[in-house]
View 1 (cartoon, rainbow over the protein chains, first blue to last red):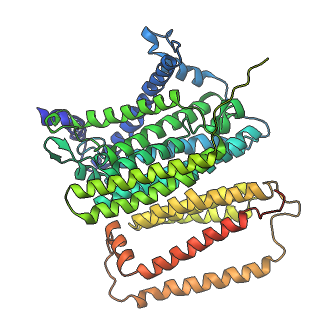
View 2 (view 1 turned 180 degrees about the vertical axis):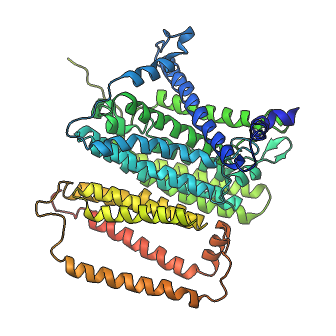
View 3 (view 1 turned 90 degrees about the vertical axis):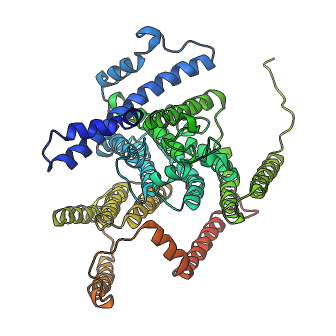
Length: 391
Length: 166
């Protein structure tokens, strides 16, 4: 029974395929899997948007959407219908072909990343040897679509937003790759399934997730910072800073093309959350060994939604950074720390079992963090704040 | 296999041709990306996963973006009035033909240089990593030093000199 609940989607797929002739089975199987991914994640996108609007509302002492349906839960449906029926405006001076291609390209690329994510036991669409590399190759290609959107609109705000977005994404891609490289070093594989298997072990009922090691914890924090910047979320949402750039690179998009950008942003956020879950939080494995009977896909999607909640919480808490702060933070703080973390992981690997390596590795990381933060802060020369009120 | 190959080859060549012939410089850069993508899928078609994904990551994720940035930051994407063809196109054609001849000669001779390679080799990412860290560590280090010096050089060129106006 437990087995069946765990494998319910796999069993369902095989049951559907058993009605078809053998020659069709591989093609139809792939088609069904892809169609499922393309349906499930936009549904999660709707839930995430609703969560975000209601949660942000609460954090800002207001109600959030509460008119459409009970407690406002049909708000995403209303939003979707509205964006479908709105007029699609293309500016006269815009480059029509590139303007049209940009959102399409973004959504296609963003969905590709899901092909390698293990969403449960035996639930990976393509079990690639270089799965992690594939994921990063796809997420790096989204920059091009951002640029296409900003450039083709022929609008100074769009272009400025695109330039900011691309500069930011290139800068934070380096720490993103370096922080994930630690996991590859320790697992000895780029296959995401094998990375999950390596974490799916328990001692004294506690899991061997990589986040529960000094280097894994540091890498997780660096990964979280870098992915927040990659997905242009607050506090790194300069490319879309409303008070400066109207809406950044998609200022000139309306109707369903705007909705596609919105979808792309959230689906991208869900996919980096999924990758973070796979790399650091044990993927589909249970947090305690006695909870092993809960189906694996519940753990995966639960962890992803938890990460989304953290994204929303960050957005409600932190103010937006300035452009120079953003770049200084990437190149002078996040990048050196992730390079140091590579060294620490190598040290951990060669120190052998024992408590000593825990102490040494944690001490190096904590000391480096404190020293770099102190030095960085002292250079900024923050004095006591002075306020000037209107007189 | 062959149909896929011809389709990909057509897409790649069309992208490269468009990159040369289009009037708008940004369009050229985007067409070049198509050619890069075609090459990447060609690698994947040959079961070279690492090379294919590295091609996408480096060429589409970094080189194409760099090209586009360079176009935007230097002279704008407007079409030059004298047309897109350079005046020295004859010399360019000769250089391109020479490079193509050398490459073609090398490819045609590769069969005799590697005797006994009958079956398609299956290479995992792990093996590539081991080979890079073991047998080919010296070339890897030389490339790393070269790239680092290029990086430092770029920073020095871009840095404002002291005393000069910003």
